[in-house]
Amino acid sequence: MSELNSSFSIKKWSENDRPREKLIAKGKNSLSDSELMAILIGSGNREESAVALSKRILASVDHKINTLGALSIKQLTKFKGIGEAKAITIIAGLELGRRRKKEEVEIKPKITSSKDAFALLQPIIGDLDHEEFWVLFLNNANKVLYKRQISIGGKTGTLVDARIVFRAALESGATAIILAHNHPSGKLSPSQSDKDLTKKLKTGGASLDINVLDHLIITEKTYFSFADEAMI
Image (cartoon, rainbow, N blue to C red; front, side, top):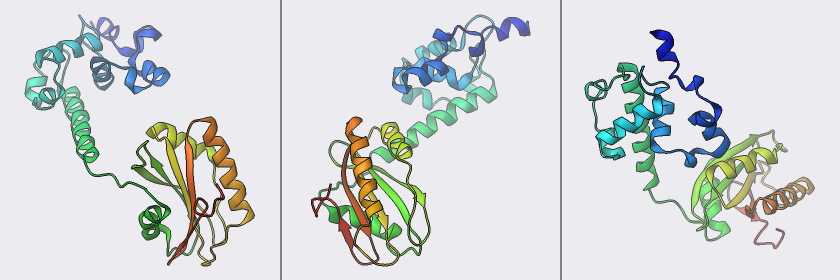
């Protein structure tokens, strides 16, 4: 009986039918609600696959995710193939989605000038005694999707891997980025390595349709903007 049940595990499906592999190959947006849910539960029961079971559960709530999220462990475990552990996984996954949605409605800061970017980043890196390289990831309305530390260095420099920058941009759906790092010395003039890095990332971004809008050098009190100085 256990062997029969295992045949409905996702691992046993043909590669074209595996939602996990589909997510990796085609991205999360390519999956249906039932396929996403199948990834959470992992396997179905003796009569139906994880996707088929997920479809049946979704049908019971008229395919409304909010209604599904309101179901209790007791209600979910009434479906054959859904034990307490799977019910908890479903509830936890939907709760994370709810919290993410709540964050998305928060107002995202919009960058209209180098001053806006400085105001956002100065409290983070302005008074550090070592260099850090950060990137602001923006949507096509120049609103900040999120900010990320790319690297940490010493008092006189930090190394930056362009692959990390653009991988993060692609994963977040950013269409533009703003580069920034601090100078603990208080010196605002960009070094030759700062100029070379800016040019490298600007060129790399162009090939990916990701616009590098600016590169800020930030100190405790003020900043230097490549864009304001027509150097980008």
